Image 1 (cartoon, helix red, strand yellow):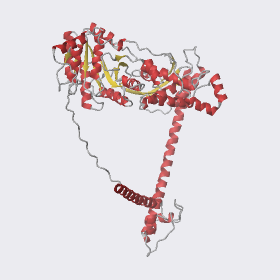
Image 2 (cartoon, helix red, strand yellow; image 1 turned 120 degrees about the vertical axis):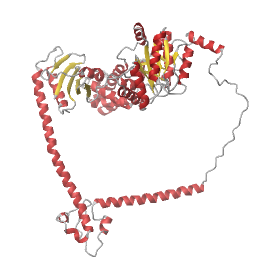
Image 3 (cartoon, one colour; image 1 turned 45 degrees about the vertical axis):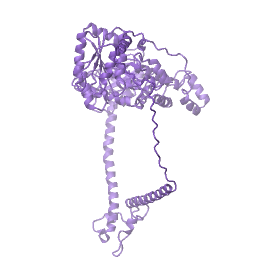
Image 4 (cartoon, one colour; image 1 turned 180 degrees about the vertical axis):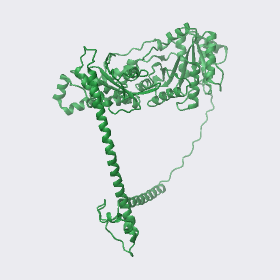
Length: 625
């Protein structure tokens, strides 16, 4: 049974809803659809599933892009209603006939909808009946075919038996004299003194099953012959050209001491300690963090060399005059077939920029859904229209949906008398500890008291690495050594920060693969016990398709392994090694699209100052270049 049908504008104005349905929906499926599907450029999907306590809904929708209308149908997922797609298309067609942009009430549409619903249900019932009627016919045909095949095989077997061919009833008589698949006639009689199985084994006058066996044997013989020949050729070649033995060259040792300094660790002496304290106290030596600098983007217009490739193909097919006339007069309405060449070129371009294939395909489907039915303006090409729509979609995805001002959140937590806790999570070797130190340096420049918590009790050297950063930055560190429960270590660190007046606690965790369930369970416990203010996923900008797998499984494991009814998931992303990828910036798009979390920091170097914000315009420009 249909739960609800709603018509509203893209601006959020509800034009019509079915009053007779009037079913009170549990939860807020429409709001969730708008927030997490339509606004996130996922409208190319066929349907959306919404789970609420005590109910599970499926939502389907369609658009009229020229007028900016959205038609949404909601029904119970367990019912599998077949007529919803037809009903939506009929409602869309009928509603457009009475639509007026100045009207806000359409009470007269109730009767039309009831009639359309009855028609759609009747069509669905007819389709069900036709399928049910068609099934036994197909079954009978299958049985007959099975009987024919078994009969032909039985006939062949009975011939092998000699005089017993006529004892089992009429099957042998039925197929006597009937032409087989290879065109021969199966009317051979085997006498008492003849060999009964010679003809059948050769397969010249019998069914197809024996010929298949013969072909396989013949093929195996040919392969074995070929294998022997190749082996002999190889052996001959090896005798003619024997391989020379490779002798190891003697190592030449240089006893002279090296002049270059190999040990770059800070000496544990008075001079070394003074140098470290100077670096930590005077931040001007290191420079200002790039987080506080505005990135300047060149406003030079880009060349459109690749933009017209798809349109040139169509222009060659249609002819010069027709394409010129269409660009001047505009097209009546865009169809998906018109958009396919330009969308394919865009998809290939995104994949070359390291965007995951799945994400690129979904983005193109969403852009196609947003442009389907729109009127092409005069003096515009389809490729440029598609690229403009894709640019808007990318900006919409990469722009954060909520505030990511950490400094403001830190001051808010300080007023409440508690430290602001940030947990850094991610896979192995992505640079969690290094970028944690960069964030600490940035916070120190804003006169915020920072404390580090060494909760990586798994990897050897992790505590010493964080201790080195803390010593250089002259900030306190809370550590308990190795083989301890990281959740308990983080809890004690937060308590210590409350006692000594630290404003921010940066929690370092062990790197773990997304499929390692014991370590993911420990991480879920740490987040559940300490309830941090921010969970940052640290990921490499070098990954392509693996970014989707990492983030989706991290979120899935954090949700599944948490004992809480409302588990904490990833709140933000820290993208590392951004200076090594040139224009392959697609990992940022893949991570944001799959998780919905914004990119809050970008690591772009090896010093403490090499941390900056994500420039959305720069990323979009690079992706579409």
